[in-house]
Length: 252
Image 1 (cartoon, rainbow, N blue to C red):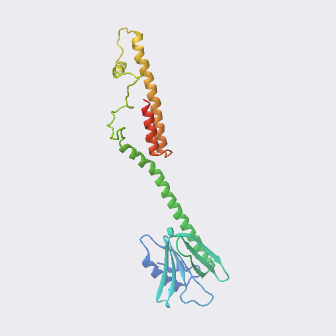
Image 2 (cartoon, rainbow, N blue to C red):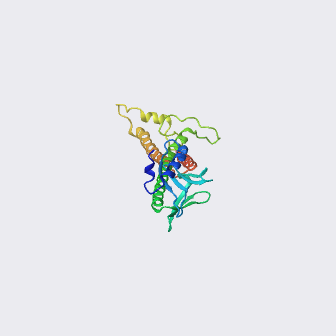
Image 3 (tube, helix red, strand yellow):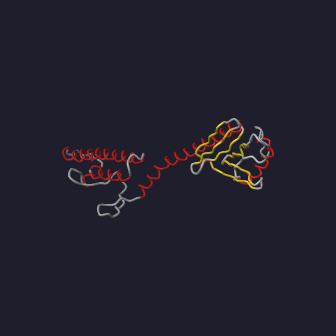
């Protein structure tokens, strides 16, 4: 790895080499170092604090015990609420604000390095929020499909609480009550008209009743389709959908 790329803003190359050797051992597959900011106090600092940015995390490093030990505070982008920095007379104070726990700050970061840190971290947080939002939108798009499959697979129950028998393949359930044609009348209506003259008063009644029934079925079908559309768009609950469907079917 070319260490000079991390020393373009006045960072100490020796500190950079030491930091990279430690951070590289903690990188995950696909993770790479993007920027390193190194503390620079007014007095000589042999082992300064630093902030290393990768494409996945922030590494806040503090050398302790004369460089024999190193303390790291590591945050993923999902753990960070915001980043702030304050320019002072000697450098800047950079503060990482996590969702939980105390804020962590490192002072005396050179102003140029602090500004670049701010840009890197703000961009990374913005990209993470966009990815999270895209994932939420994908869940919302998939949700109606799952609900629709659940309705198809669940059998309805009759008044006694027992699963209803499978309905025959037809446009709507057939019920015969007052004012409805009998099965024999339906069969007669479906048979071809004979070539010999028929009595108008006899044939006209089944035909007009069949037309009225077809118009009624069309109205019921439209109501059922409208209910199904409302449910697919999650404008009504499943219980409301089932209740309204039963009310429509009971009017047959």
